[in-house]
Length: 589
Image (cartoon, rainbow, N blue to C red; front, side):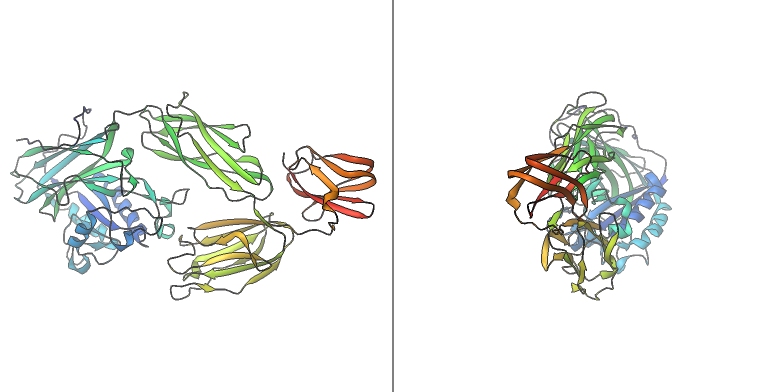
């Protein structure tokens, strides 16, 4: 006998044939279903994710994972996403959970393995429980397939189950909608699952529970006699988002399972959701770009990445990506690969050279896809903006380190433009309690140069704020250098500043000369207020070295050739008639 269940929302649509069906009628052992209770602020949850992933790799289609964000560790802090659902609390309460991460295997009580004598088990027991459940015969087999119409967002799930032996009067069908590849924060990721950290520093969450299509505890199965095959067809219109977290149609999966009441899972199966009826065929979108830190004055060189996503129905195999800094002529890069609908890839672009201006913008744009024009041009560009390093005119530098409660995670270094370390510290000892504690100030006298403060946190949660408001700051003559304070980050933070103290040249009359254009390219002009009988014109770098020296006579303007001078910041020093005048000059070619 076959039964059709229509949980209908929206209009009916046509689907292609589904490959997994029909369900097997041969008796089989139970597939394992791990309901993993997790949270973005749970330190050891990434270790649980690794165990679940390993079990999936080992057991394949005989093991399914459903990650449930629930409890205090899933409560979002300021600026954090909310991955919770309305279903998590009921699942946790039933499982008698006492600590995270925890999980149930088929909602079964395994003697001696559960927390608080419940079905929830600590991560170290999941493998044992999985091996046990895989040896238990199932009296029902399950097969499932799913498709979603991209334009209407209507999901259709077909579930077939066949009873190879008599079931019970309490059997229920449950269908969960999950989402993969959701980027977000995750405490403990750097220590326990660094492979899931993306280039943008975010963690890739998998098998995230988004909805129970059949409700919290499923729908009743009316005929559970041996030999009965039932086909259930369920419809659900997928909303744009849940808790402001977008539903990504290209990264959905469904897991169907049959329970006794709301407790033990007799068998399960799952499937990715196939997407049909695409809005566009060719639509490559750039939806993220590397953040660039401030640069020292002069030439710059950056290896950027962008995240490219396929929003179209045609698999992307090639794309032309243009890179341009500060409006210069774009440089093309030809990408090749294979990107199916809904898939994203981080594209590492070739090293790009540019001239650092006081304010800078690098634009990255897709110009064609698979040798043709992209059908949606509004999502083809990503830009990253950055400035020159902040400048201080005082070289009495103080590095002030205030640690959070876990100083053993923190180390830092201060390096000059030659990448030589001029000061460093850490790892430190732990404070022994949550809270910040200071270290003795480190006082330095630094020559003119550009410096990089690099701060590392081995755990990946920065210096603030869960375990104390720690930070590392740099002061010049006891005044905080603007922007040079490292506190809130994940594993690595970089800050740059320049020390630019007047050299031995005495600035007497800054208005006696004018230098233009500034910044200069291949040449610049030094203009005098009055005609001078003789003058010595020198180009001096920030270390006080004379780069170029010229004598002039009977002139009111002189053109200096800078075509062979490296990009950077210099001083134009003019000595004439017993006085010295200086002007700062940037050379940018």
